[in-house]
Image (tube, rainbow, N blue to C red; front, side, top):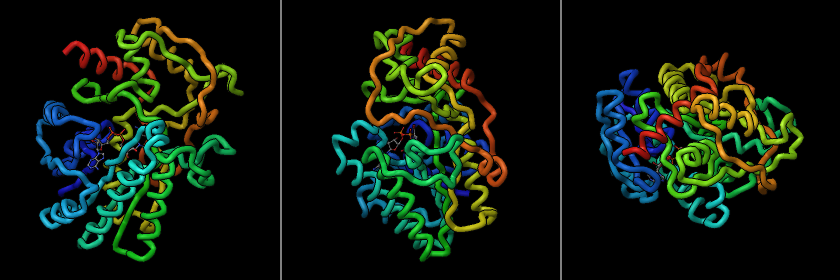
Length: 339
Ligand SMILES: NC(=O)c1ccc[n+]([C@@H]2O[C@H](COP(=O)([O-])OP(=O)(O)OC[C@H]3O[C@@H](n4cnc5c(N)ncnc54)[C@H](O)[C@@H]3O)[C@@H](O)[C@H]2O)c1
């Protein structure tokens, strides 16, 4: 079965391509390489022994999306990762974020809606919950006003899919709300490749440990948490990737109970920033150089997933823990810097 993975050379997309190929799917990747590189294909081949079909294409170009779907009208499903994802950048370049994250989604849905088989999986985010009133956060928690244009694109994206599903009963879709994806494939053939200064904690930790950055700043040590630092739900990217295969199979086997479903993807365990650093120190044998500084605007205090729906309904749960993720991220960092 042929599956289209947009943004398939990116961090989460590349790991998902590997898991899809492991399950025997034929994968077609679309990526414009705006935040990835064609070398990622070599990593995918090294792990799975199969080279996916790749089309370098910008999904903002409507005509290209139209001709792609004409050529590949036999796709059994689409997993839509392609988006710009830097929260800080989105504050300074809101129109770029709305253009890329919304237009690409609309164009893909428009063309998918013309096909006989219409299965669609969307990369959403726990940012839709903002600072939730209750922890762990269930899928029923209200969506809070977005803190950034990036976060808003995920909320609007979900609305666009929901509205389209209302009038198109042939469209079956699942929005997956990721908590904090980290780590890399155990083989260190693929991983996260942040361009410039990393915006996320784990690449910043590994870049500091390898000597690219002097010191990690921990934003805020006076939050109302046991050790004063923010709490997040760090999920291993390989676990996350596997959830996409399970979600796709749910749609292909018509197991979905409505044509628009939402699932949280997290471990269900919250870890503080200091616990994440301790985990890194433990698996790397290093002592990370960090300093607690002032709070950063826009950070929620604590967010971790209620995983019951994903466990019971989707039939998926995480198998890897924070140490596994840190060890794999560290192995990946060492590999790319020693190249
Ligand atoms: N990484 C996270 O922490 C996180 C958390 C929640 C949700 N998400 C979402 O998951 C998805 C994947 O995230 P990621 O971390 O793998 O990001 P990523 O940047 O590594 O991957 C996205 C890929 O999409 C490609 N792309 C972007 N715009 C495109 C366009 N117009 N046409 C074709 N390709 C395009 C990029 O080149 C990149 O390879 C994104 O939608 C992101 O918003 C990520």
